[in-house]
Length: 318
Length: 297
Image 1 (tube, helix red, strand yellow):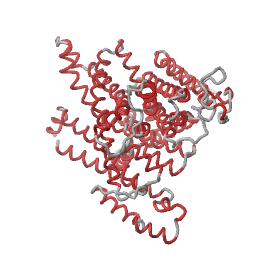
Image 2 (cartoon, helix red, strand yellow; image 1 turned 45 degrees about the vertical axis):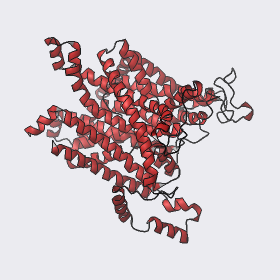
Image 3 (spheres, chains in turn cyan, red; image 1 turned 60 degrees about the horizontal axis):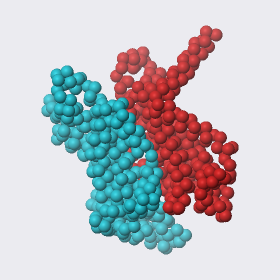
Image 4 (cartoon, chains in turn orange, purple; image 1 turned 180 degrees about the horizontal axis):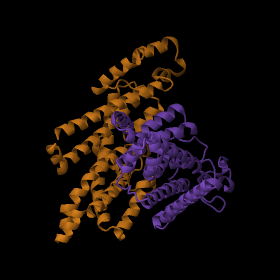
């Protein structure tokens, strides 16, 4: 067990290392650099030299990578180009805001997805399944920006129930944020819930068809006891991993949703820094988003490891 | 003469197989709906330039934001352009770019996956680590960076989309190859002294083809979603090209009093994505593959 956990953590770290290399090399080989972008037409002679010195661009690339990586591990990503502010300070409130949004969506989404997935699996091909599955297919396939736009059109403009666009400063307290985030949370939770519900459904169906469940039925175990004791624990384990992958994948969707609602989170920062060609910030964002992805996956793997009795005995026997 | 006959017979049976799969797909209600929507959109993409009633880029200040009427079926947008014309033309770019993008994704993802599954060992480990690393950079960040630095031309978009949506196919192809590789016929092909290339071409590809094709069909709908998101964010095709993502983002600011110019492209894009999704689902079921347990990576 401890060996497996350490191995997983190491693999995650290696992945992050490769990501840092890719982003560094990627931003390096693309035409232009921070100084030529920043100075635009004045990019020559004295000024260019001074800028190179200020940003430390006058040393070889591998040295810059090492110093950048060492600082990044300590949480220091250098200075952003557009705001002339430490990237750390720009990122802080943005990360907080995005976390509020994402965790609200996850906490609403997971219970609903579990219920919908189990209901559709137990009443497979009957009316509840057909109805719910049709809705989930719609919720899952329609792009975030369309569902978000429709939510604004119907709930904010036609019904006038909630504000359609978030117009709060970046560092605002949670309570002030609350009425503003309801629509973005619904938009993100909808697509996430649909994905997860489908996975839970097929996982439950698979377990229901297995031999030990058939055995339990033949033994005369009451239906609901069988569902809760034999089916669900076994069906939800494999789902955890896939749910984690889905959450990580939806990071991209969060970017779009934040732009639609003008929400001051990481996603909007992605668009802003790319529009401004603020490469130091883009590098920092790539590393942070990749770390989120890797840690979600790691967490899912560890949960699966700890909850799965079969894996435990496997390791002991070895 | 005899050889030719055998060849013809085989070809016929392939055609029969394909038509059998399509019939199986269409025999389920969801598959039938998906196929019809997809065929409708593909046909529309081919004939829309000939049936469009107005010029898609003709700006007319006197006709700004007209409500739907007999003359302008879906109304006009903020520049006085006909929304119906732009809507029926709006899927062409997206369909073309994502179709070729998925082909590229299928090719490189499938081949690399098969190769990794076959050779195994150190090479496999290293390649999969790199693929994992690429997977963990959010696609949207990578795409935005590429597009903002290299431009939004088709020659940039198709390979970039193909590359970023092929990563997941590598995993699927590799797993499918792993399932096949332990089978007896691979062992006997090796014993017969066949080269790696011959084994891949004759033994592995026919056996992993279904899984990869299903994955590719799914990628197509995700790529379409990703491409329209890029257009929506202003990083896809450039105006005045009619494109649904772009139209939605333009019309969004005015939707409180001109909802028609945002509803029409929304219906177009949603129906196409749902159509491809249902078709891919039916395709998977017709081939006997359950893809609902897979994560969209």
